[in-house]
Image (tube, rainbow, N blue to C red; front, side):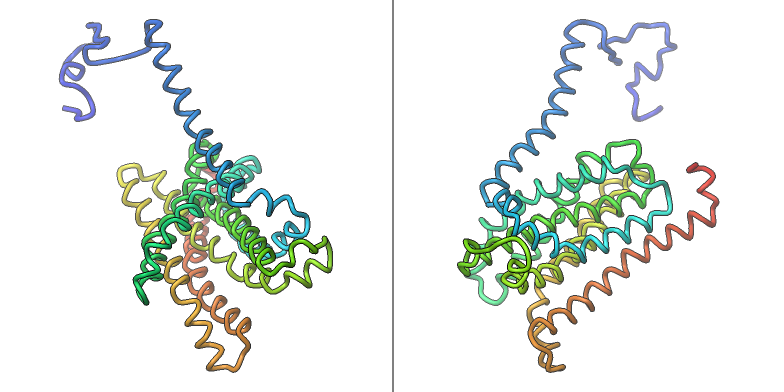
Length: 327
């Protein structure tokens, strides 16, 4: 017997009306109302999430950061390395190009949903600070990593994932990278705004060279941090794409992707300060130089991890002649 069917339905020869006995279809006005209400709730749930995220974004200063021209300029500059890596991932997709509408929507959703992670991080950090030397690593592995990677993956899952044009495993990496870029953009913007506000430079900041001179240091630091978000979420996104085409193991595959992204992310957060200090101590480089070298080494290792998956997919795509099927 087919386990997905009721025994009566399996045994029936098709001549018996099994409506609301073992089968169901839309027949009555109540049925129609139930169908309409269901789809309304499904659609509304997504927009409710977006609306709440938008409110949180306004509350934590994200709108102020994005609406200040000088901060906007510094944010764009800080996002260039992450945008470059995202572009490479995009063109590494050997299948059909992803539509602009899905890319833009994913980018915007990741900006909005980032606010949930920011809210949770701000609230939860106080509970880990009294734990001494283990406090921050635990915070990174239990809160920051899982939370931020989940909201970035949710930015893909809410919209692009459900579209028929998300039609290949590798598409998950592309949309994941876009989500990482959006997350890095709003995070950089808020960090830059906070730094300039605390230093008292924001009030006199003007658009142009003055902004770059005043906010150059924090912009450079955020520029180096951005590509990591692309790497983490492209990794989780790749496994989300793999899960879409392996429904029998969908849950474990998604969890594996999130675990990998979380561990890579949290390990970076935990090791970047001591690692940068060690590089500076061994090489005599200034603090920013040590940070640059450490980030390049770390992102190089784990960037290669996800890029190798894209290269292997490209090889399999070409070797199997999948282009003829995809055309």
